[in-house]
Length: 87
Image 1 (cartoon, rainbow, N blue to C red):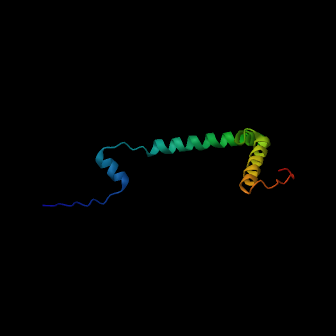
Image 2 (image 1 turned 180 degrees about the vertical axis):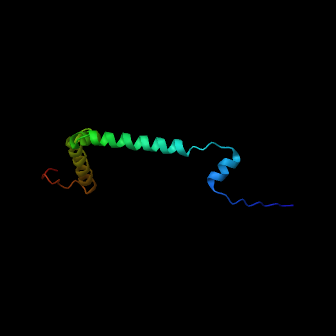
Image 3 (image 1 turned 180 degrees about the horizontal axis):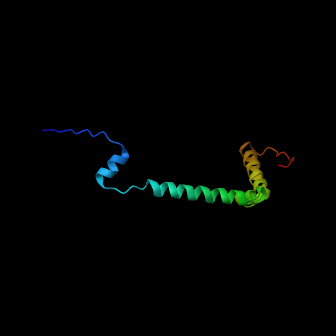
């Protein structure tokens, strides 16, 4: 014998029926607090500080990465010259 029961209820009604706590107010408060903290951090950072945070090595790191990519491409192409004219 097979019995199927379909229950049509909202997630909130299911949580209440099962005796689970209502965590929605806590989630809303945490999200509001996180949003305020992120906004305060963004307001406090000037563009240079943000750039230094995102790119710790700054432009030197980007230049090193660019040189690495050029050398890898030139090696893959059989030792062709780079844009400096060096091999």
